[in-house]
Image (cartoon, rainbow, N blue to C red):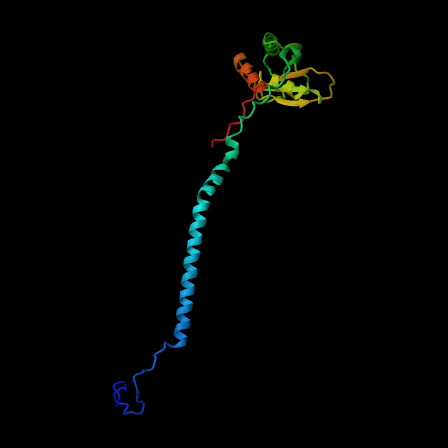
Amino acid sequence: MSMLTPPGMRGKYRVTGTAYPRMRRPRRRRIVLAVLGSVLALGLLGYGTLQLIDVFRGDAGKRTAAGSKAGCTPAAKGRPAAAKPPVKVLPEPGQITVNVYNATPRSGLAKSVGDELKKRGFRVGKVGNAPADFDKKVAGTGILLGSPKTDRALYSVLGTQLPGAAQQTDARETADVDLILGTAFKQLSTKEDADRALAAMARPAPAPSPKC
C-alpha cells in the first residue's frame, strides 16, 4: 500500500506513484467569493466618490448659501455702492392754498389753526365753520378734502402738519384743499416735527446694503 493511500481504504482507491491528486475548491464557493469581492469593491468605490463630491461641494455650497442672503454674491461684492434715491420734488407750502374749516364745538379753532399755517408758509384761503355735511360729523383729527385731480404730493405736504388726517375728494375743479378739523383734533404737529417729516419725504433713506 502506498503511503498516499488513506488508511482504511484497503487499496481500493490506492494512489500509486509519486503524483497525488490536486485538491480543488468547489466551483460554487469561488463564485460566492468573487461576488462578495465585487460588492466590496463597488462599495468602497462609491464611498470614495461621495467623499470627493462632499469635498468639492463644501466650499461652493457655503458660498451659494451665503450669497443667497440679500443678494450677497461674489459679483455683488465687487459692485459699486447703489446710488442714493433721487430727491423728490414736493410742492412748497406757499404753492398750497388751504381752506380751514371747524367741524368741532370749539369756537375760534379754524382761525387759530389758519394763522399757524400762515406762519408756516401756507396760503390760507377761507376760514370758518365746516359745511353742514361735515359739521359735528368728523370723529377723527381732520379731513383733507380736494379735487380728484389734486396732486398726491400736495396731500403729503399738508399731511405733515396734521398726521392721521383722512383724504377725500369732491367735485371741485380748483387746486385748493380744505382742512376740516374733527372732534379728535388737539393741535397741529410742531413745526420742527413737520419740517423733519418734509425732509424725510424729500430725501428718502436708501435701501440698506446687503451684508456679505
